[in-house]
Image (cartoon, rainbow, N blue to C red):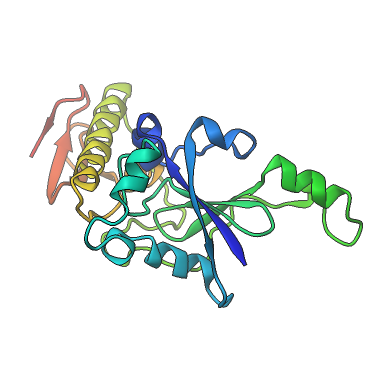
Length: 221
């Protein structure tokens, strides 16, 4: 069966690795159709595609460079934020753990609405990741967590520290590395811990160390 591979455009890369979601009805605005792949074994097709689209697998000696350059792209290995469109037209977004179903592309929705034996676009349930784990280490929990209370200044400092994680990931990925994807901002925010006897300061694990963020937003280790 045929699957479409869509890679993030360079000007969307930062948003994509920050877990921004593209519009399935306007995928061309944020992504480029890189190529199609044929997958025979349908037991774990998305897992297989993610593995086969890593640079060391499909371009160990730079074989993909001409195609990447011709498409105006800046990365070879499939990453968080890239997209696979499955044979039924469902847009599957690479997430930090697995794929997230963003729903049908418009042309696929129209085709389904004309087929009484298949569900129409309005029946699609989005936002359900598959069970395929892209990464095994360094992940923040997805379980509901009561967030620590913070001031506006603390939240601004936390957002700045999270964006630093995103920028470091994007830079390392562009250099050809295989960094662990950063958490979503909500996951990072949920990892914040309150302190005792520190006048409202909070603590967060960041870049291998614990940061203390005072009520006025001042961060220190």
